[in-house]
Image (cartoon, rainbow, N blue to C red; front, side):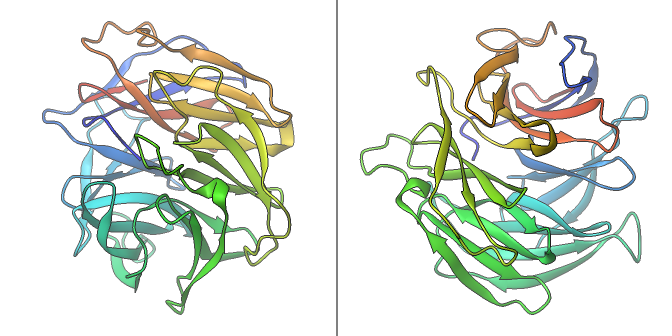
Length: 311
């Protein structure tokens, strides 16, 4: 969940070792607060925003790329998690943003199959007992079913995007924020890989995982993989898990990327502090999300800052 408004994107060339070469990809003319992103089959990015429920697309492969409005999802002022549930079809979390809480929490589907530029948008479910849905991921065995973490309830909701059925899959104290947390955000980023649900917890400053079955049911206890070495000025947000090479890459809102092995070793591989990835940008950026393209040499990293998109 974002704390600082305004955003940029960063695409980093990498062969599982990040190169420090960057060029500006796009510069928003106004402040656009982007929360999360997903990759379409054509290589374009879908960007969820706090901009009146607007969903944007950006093609990072073209010169002079422009962010284009895809749709404004009804009944939402802010969009959060997004997950692919079929070929060129996505589930999106939206709601009316308050102070560390939302009303009208809703799951939408956005389907590009009938029209690659103007998708079909449908309301799947409204979740009145949700407080602050954030990260979301599809179940690999049943991709039309998604898990969505509630950062305030410390719960994981299971939503069937075909039927609209919603239920709480499980709760756990390690998904919550401590009662005395200055930022009351528990489970934040959420991904599924290799029989585990991985997550970050902002307030508890951890990266963890829990074993789940094919239907998203918890089958064991939560394992804390890593805790932040120094959380005074940053925390972990969204991330990608590459379980085939036993590593995760986590976005840090101090404009950095952390590499965390699944046995707990962690290091900053790019950015941090006042570093802006060797880009002469004015102000400090905040790294908030990562997506890996179909080509194994590209990262795309979301950054808050002064409305830059950087590659």
